[in-house]
Amino acid sequence: MSSLDKNIQIKNTLTGDKEVFKPISKNRVGMYVCGPTVYGEPHLGHARSAITFDVVFRYFTYLGYRVRYVRNITDVGHLEDELSGEGEDKIAKKARLEQLEPMEVAQRYTNLYRDMMSKLNVLPPSIEPTASGHILEQIEVIESIISNGLAYECKGSVYLDVTAYVEKYHYGELSGRVLEELMTGSRSLEGQSDKKHPADFALWKKAEPSHIMQWSSPWGKGFPGWHIECTAMSSKYLGVPFDIHGGGMDLKFPHHEAEIAQSYAAFDCAPVNYWMHNNMMTLDGQKMAKSKGNFISLSQMFDGDHPLLKKAHSPMTVRFLMLQAHYGSPIDFSNRALESAETACNKLLKGLTFINDLQPDDSNQFDKEISNQIIEKCNSCFKRMNDDFNTAETIAVLFDLLSLAHKISQASTIISSEALIGLKKTYKEFLSDVLGISSESSDSSDTLPDIIDVLLDVRKEARDKKDFELSDYIRDRLNVLGVKINDSKEKSTYSFQ
Ligand code: ZN
Image (cartoon, rainbow, N blue to C red; front, side, top):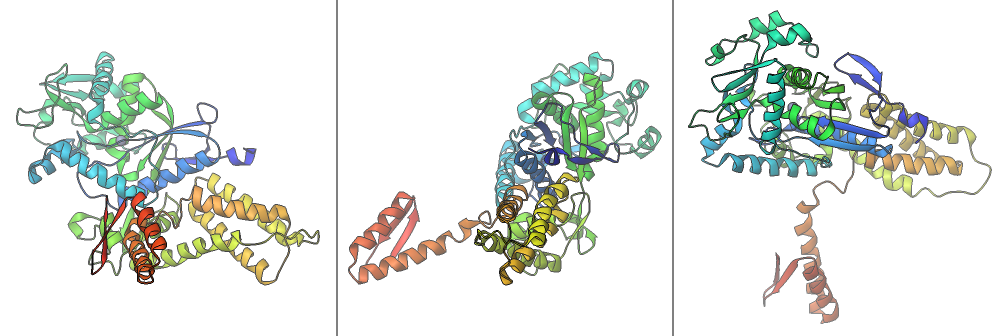
């Protein structure tokens, strides 16, 4: 790793400044990102957060850091009214409506989320803990906060005592909200009368006997508040403080603000050194929302099954469109933007073969200027990524490298072997390994039946010509791969074993 590689700057959303990244442990990164609440179809918002931090994960790994990336699954405790922390649990509600066990709902949408992330070439995190699997850890953190005098129990629920908290710590530093604003902003809802102060938030909620998700606790049967799971799981797997906490900017308040308060209240320490927030998306300039009818799930995007979409778009097109913007900027999804992303993505992918096929020339008479330009552009990829993971500018540099490659090929320009090796390595590694743009990860299972049909056609021709050696070879090889061929008089069909 050269010194250039390690000079990463991160826009810390807590301070608003771009800061040089200094890991807590040398060559290691601990990163926590708030994952999905698994009660519905994964959508573009999920994809943007996952892709943003996938690239951060990939780039640190590429530079040789050992990254422990924790992304949780919220399967309990996320209530409908996020601001007040009141209302029905999102997963329990879905379970009630669909007459399913809540864990069935959570499992179904967890599977779907993982499936969609894999289509988008998002790498699985190192640890993917669930809130329901960490109830004891959450109770422990709440007990520490109570023993530090910063939370109180009332009728089986436990609240963080914001009034006591602000005597010792600052509350609202991430979202820039002040306590008065929080007080007037808190709506008066049923159950809030239990709180000492309207801005107090629940760490643990008492469950009514009819509530289907509940656990025993020192305060009776109940369930954890939404925010406490991230404090419990991040501190368990990454310690306090850890390096990077990520999430969508819509989570700044109340969720991340609450995480900061819980960490100070439990451990007398900030949870993390760098906060990173990805921006949101619009569709044709409009904020995406279920109520507006312009809310597109990832399966609708990949199937083209939405009235606002002109056609289906591959996961790679969606990934590419997101990376064409810096994660801190908003993105507008439109049919036009998707189509031009598709064209640009394919152009860069085709460039992989083109650049790889460029042949070295041992002559010492190479073009110094163009060789230097190429080397400088290769270094630029690092510089652009080091600058707060600027994928948009990195993509622009890859396009520059591709046009330089075309230029030298057309003019038969000889470049130095250093430039040629650098060009091939940088182009391939930044496109595939760092940005995760690859043609292989587009969903190959869609084309599998077509490929088997082609093989069956070839086999039929072989059988017609009585070439049984070839036809048996195709049958046996497919059989080993789990594809069983069933021959009948009329035709051959297949089934997966
Ligand atoms: Zn979280």
